[in-house]
Image 1 (cartoon, rainbow, N blue to C red):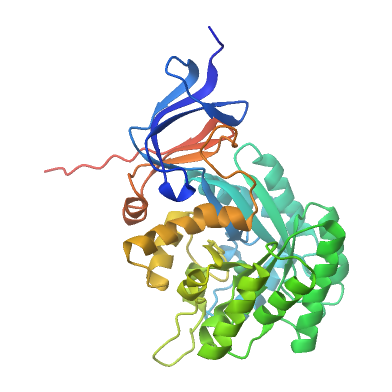
Image 2: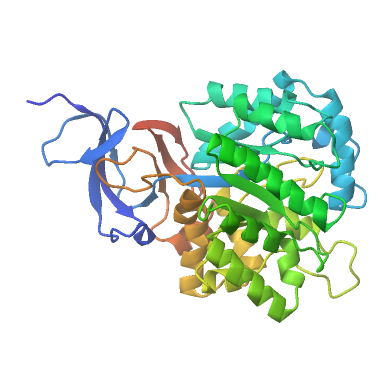
Length: 417
Ligand code: FE2
């Protein structure tokens, strides 16, 4: 008799968008990887999934773990704008310590895992205000929660690289001290030449470290913002196609049709991954508009129609930018469906793809699948379809990381009459 495997899951329904059909399957796990189940297999832990829908976990591609839960420590963002949010953040950044960052980040990592997240890419501010302290805190949290979630850290120069003298040196240091991905915010410079230089510096760092790039791009309603096109052009000039992500890109929604089409064509040619963050940007953008107010999110449907990879992120949790958020990507899925007018059955499937297969492409996860040989990561949802998962905000019945159950949720509701 062979020794028992670590975990055996009977009768789970893979989401069809994974590409292997949706017929119920059994799957086992040993030493952190899936293997094919056999009828007489013995296991230390057995789950009967009863036909529930499963994916290899939700993938959070854009969050700011160094800023989470700071809202209660700073004055309220009265104007509700991005500009005031960044200014209020300065006080918080002066006061933080690596320990306070690690503690808050850890609480939100736990919340994300409870909501089925198995991978996270987080941005971390790198600037002359907080120095490398936010990075030190998030690196400590990553170490502490390594058994629950895999994390990529983006070195994010939110205050600009040229505008904030000293940040370039800190960016290089950040890559030596735990950052994996080079970030950017090229619109936050003094004019187009400086924005282009900001992007060029990011590519110099990325080339030196063989790293991917993930920038905050044109997070503004200003239809004259042009840094998405710059990023696409420099991506192609550096041969970094498929390795660069543009987050937010709110201004793309405000472009005239001809220019928008030409930029989307360059985005496609450069293989940029696009991330919309509707929770934050529905709250911030268009805030000071007279009616009709702009929605503030990028052209999700137009990008998808051109075959661009689009995902979404939570972005903010109880900070100066956004007062809600739990790291729950089904909640953000529901917001995205509303914000991007995605209601048809195929569109709902596209929404479900965003925090799963599409986000896995953003993070360039090599084997995001429910099949033998893949990492044994999974969330089993209390739902039978993607539509039901989003509609019901389905409980994450089991969350599995490297073949181990790391979270369970059981919801009991009953009419009392
Ligand atoms: Fe962001």
